[in-house]
Length: 343
Image (cartoon, rainbow, N blue to C red; front, side):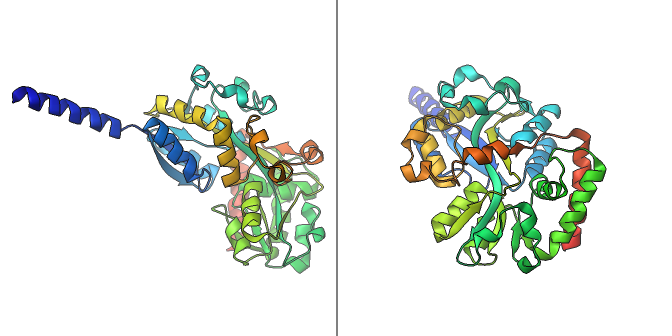
């Protein structure tokens, strides 16, 4: 009897250990299909717990607060990887555990924000431009960023609640570079954005496609994946790349310094790098994939959709945000002033 009890206790302990296998993902809202999470758990027995954020700033502040603990993976945008490295919030990725790493597009690797991809693995990439509901307005009326300032667009525009993407607009119309650290140039961009406020109905980064889908606004500055999902829903959305250039970004997996399930984090990243998982992600989210092996699996329609795969002429004019160090505080100061002007 005693032996049976001992065996039963051991079995229960084993079941408990299996049940506790998990990986905690800190991600943007609606940014990974449930089907992918279900497939990962079915194959590995590892449960994926998802927590969400609505901005890089929110994600960064939370991880700083907890010293990188409580999360096994996070999905920051390009320039925030630099910032997180400087804050000692990340741990190196063991690329020997990623057998599908060669599927990634080389041009998106070894970038200045993370040389050698020591700390980050690309998940999705894309652009920030202008989505227009063609049932409600003529997309040819918006061909450059400065067109958003037209008085006939009063109270018709959604803007992302994203300091750098929106300041890019102000900097572009003033003729400045999007990564400037010159406070006078940043101030002039701020003043231009104040002049835009009568046309702005709301700021939103949590599912910005929804006001477009619901008919609350005829156009919005948003990420290409959100525009794509709005097009899937409405069938009347056009994504306009302003002639004066857009910002591109790469969202990547990183492993926070305090992660408890590091092995599971690597297994999850490698699972996402499979071509068929990349296909499910792109079809469910609509952003561009960094996975070369995924592209042949996509429908011809999706491969040729400029929302999903930007034309070469657009890419040539595009820029990436870089981390600006102490100048981040300057942007944040004017950003808060801008939103206070709107409220």
